[in-house]
Image: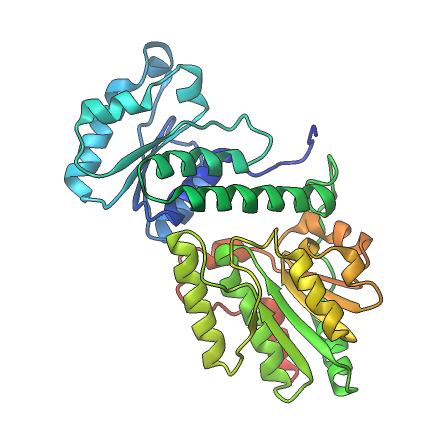
Length: 354
C-alpha cells in the first residue's frame, strides 16, 4: 500500500531489535542526525548509540575509514558485550561493505552488521535484517528466528487488517475522555457485571499497560473480573526479562493473571484470547495494548473498553465495534528504560475514583 501518513522506520526497528538481543552498543553508519530522537531514547534504555557522522565528503568518497575508526574507538573505550553496526540510507546508497569494516577494525567484541535503510514500507524488514545476522552469529537459534518470522508476519497482518496500516491515511485522534470511560467502567462493575481485563501488549509498552489492569483491581478489588496478560516466558533476552519483571509487579499488587502468549506474540494472540473471551462470555472487557489483534467476532455483543498508544488506531477500533477507545499519549517514551511498572493516565483516573 502507498501510505500518505508517517510510518515506523526500518532503521529504528533494527536498533530496537539489537537492544532486545542484548546489544549494548550500536553504531549508526550515516549522518549524525539519522534517527536522532530514537537514538537518544535508546540510550535511556541502556544501549549506547554512536554515529559515524557521515558528511558530504563521505557521500562521494565512501565512509569505510570513519566506520573503522568508530568501531575501534567503541571497542577500546566502552568495552561493550555486543556491537551492532546499523546501516542507513546513506550507507546503502554509497554501497558500504559493513562486514569488511568489522574485519578491518579487528574488534574483539562480538559484532554483527545490519544492512538496512529507511526505504522499506514495513518496519519489520529492519527487525529481520537484524535477526538474520544474529542467528548466523549464534546469538539466537534457527528455531527462534523462525518463531520471530511468524510473530512479525502476524503482527503485520493485524496492522493491515484492523490497525493503523489498514488505510493509506487515518486521522489521528486522542480518543474518549478518560474520566468518562473510567466512570462507565466502574459503574458496570458496581452493577455486578462480569468482566475481563486483558493485556495484549507489545514488548516494553506493557510496563504501562499493566498498570491499567492493576488500577482496575485497586479500584474494585472484589469485582467479578478475570485478568489475562501476554507474559509467557518466550522471546529475545530483553523481552523475557521485561515479562518476568512485569508479572512479578502484577503479583505484588495481588493480581495473578492467566497467561496467554508472550510480549512479542501480541499479533498472534488474537484467536487464543478471543476463544477465552468466548468461553467466559463476559458483560464487558477492558483490552489494553494491541486490542485490534482480537478479531471482532469474539467481542461482538460485549461492551469493550480498549486502550491503545496509537492516535491513528482510534478510528479502526471504533469501526470494529469497540464502544470506548482511550489513548495513552507519550506512552512509549515513558516506558523506554523502565524496569518496573509505570503509572498510566487512565490508571491514575481509575484510582482517583476509588
